[in-house]
Figure (tube, rainbow, N blue to C red):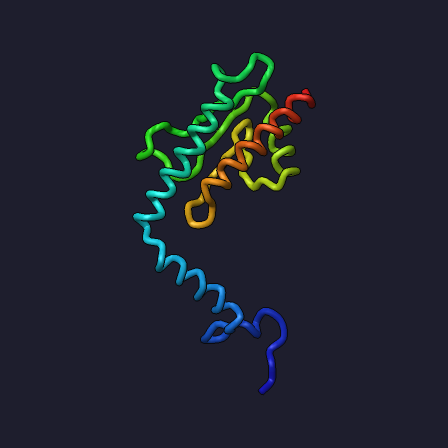
Length: 146
């Protein structure tokens, strides 16, 4: 049998086994985690993130010289998914760079939004807590760059 070189060689009626194995494993995980359970965990994770952000970084709670965070995502649980969009009292570019340095994966949206999403399938409450600590140090560093 002659092999077809390049990408055309992968155009066959059945997918290669090495590509099917990871897909099979992910489907098993989805089978164990129902959508109802994922949504319930999503609501709890995002609520926990929202609570910690308001507790540590809201304008009224932050010290006068400390940076603060605004949540611009709708407050009603029914009106949002797992992500929160944040704005900051310091330049978003600085905050995003500092979070990247700390290994945080988030989504910067111009002109000044940062989307953070605790995903219920693979994030934990401890991950949310760690994010808050990393955000605190990132905000402190970002504020010194002004």
